[in-house]
Length: 266
Image (cartoon, rainbow, N blue to C red; front, side):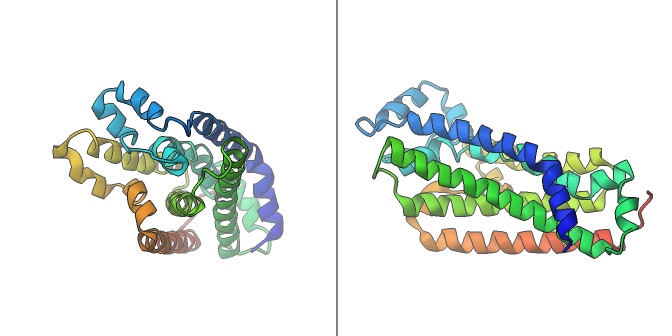
């Protein structure tokens, strides 16, 4: 791993990181502030005004009985699946494909660093920066909950939900990194980085619109974020996280191998 390259990636991506952080924090703050401990059904009543298929597609059909369920239903059904992509997709592309596309990879390879060193450094930066981004949002969520509704948050449920959610986004990072290592053009790398998560999201949304399409959820990575199951089954949450982290590692290793072996036109 090369520290200079790591901090160069940090310098190139910190603005995007901050934008994503504040977008997530904004939506999180809004949803937390909408919680009413005296009338937990108020939000559900408002959601019922939406068409049933729409509320199911966006994951708003879960019955929330406490603050943890409220956050799970209205943040992790859609918003926290989509908005991390603001950072993940361009950052993954910036790791390898953008340097090849712009021609700057030739200068990186002219240094004593091998392709493996470069790709490992970029992979470590991508995964660590994504994990720090999401963990920062989680910590801010806990702080906001304690300020607005002290004692209402069930920490075990909230932390397990975020553990699985972060692991899912790390898999998406790995998919974007693999695409970045595979393609020499940013447009192709970004197309894969965007296309696969969007496909997962559409499949998940479709599964909630009708019984005939329910089976499509099994083709979506986002189906792993089964909020009622995570809240009721700690073993499911921990096993899912372990499997997702293993998938992340395997995809990143494949990406590093491809980049190390492929012929580059730069």
